[in-house]
Every structure is written in C-alpha cells, then in structure tokens.
Amino acid sequence: MLKIEELVHAYIHSHCDFEKEIVLTNYFQADWEADILLIDSEGFSHEIEIKLSKSDFKNDFKKSYLNKETGEKFLKHDKISCGDYICNAFSFLLPMGMVEHSMIPEHCGIIEFYHNADTWETEFYLIRKPEKVHEDPYWNLNDKDLFIRKMALNLLQRKMEIKGKHEELIFKNPFDIKKNK
Image (cartoon, rainbow, N blue to C red; front, side):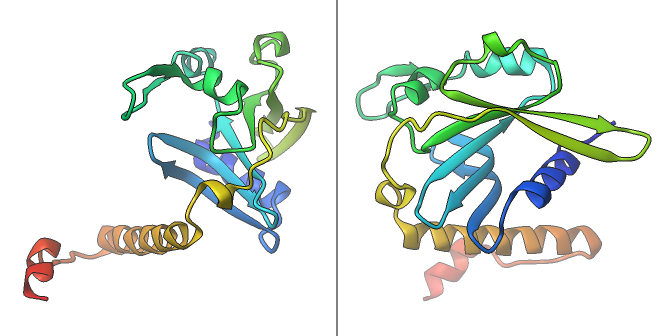
C-alpha cells in the first residue's frame, strides 16, 4: 500500500520546480496544517490537501476554527471560499475516482492519482485547476523573515529527530540555557 510520504514525494518531484518555488510538506501555520504548500517567486501560494479515504475527505468540511480575538467559530471551507484564507488557492489530491467531482466545491482544484502497485509508478491528473480566492501575495500576509527562521528551526529539529533515532542524544534543558545568558 502506498504511504502518504511516498505519495508526497512522487507528487513534488514530478510537479514542483524547486528552483522557482518554495515547497513545504506538513507545514503548520497558526491553526492549520498544509500537507503540501507551494509558494512561487511572485508569492502566489497553493495549498494541496491529501485525502486517501472518503471519510477523511468528508471530515475536512467539518473542520472548524475559532477566531481567538472575536470568539467567532468558522468552517475551514467557508473561510477559503470567501477569500479570507492565507493561501491564494486550494486543491485536493485524491485517489482516482474516490469522490464525485460534484462533491468538491468549485473553488477547489482537483488532482487525482493512480498508483500501480506492480510497477510502483504513480501518475497524477489535473482534473480542475483551483480558483484564485484572493490576490494578496503570501508575503503580504506573512512575515518573510519569521517564515525563514521557522523553516531553519524546523530543519534543525528534524535533523536532531533523525539523528536521535540512530544514537542516543542528551540535551540540556533549553530553558536553563536561556537563564544563563
């Protein structure tokens, strides 16, 4: 069975230009996580949400968030469709034929894939391009310097996580280190 990491790897290595785009996977931004986040050189951002089951797909439309300032509760896809969303575009990446296209809101792009378990080939099909829900570049809505620092911290944490799986690492408490400075 195809693992989500293998699917992500196949997609980004066949459809992303690493010299022209920032490509992030499992990227957390405030209260949401993008399975794949693409940011092009002009700052246009595209979130791709991967769904491997019908129930997971249906649950995506039940996701709600709470505005910390106003206390207002809103549904994720209501926020996307009205343009009050961090990304310029949103797409679903789904197994071929898993969901009727009519069940997917018009603002969402549809990318389907077929994985041949015998040859280990995965093919992707752009069924519908996503609508641009707003024109604001990602960098007008996010602090680019903070974004870069967060990426560097994430890389460091992942390096330590991987290294820690192969050998025992002992670190001082980071709060004790800050007290000494």
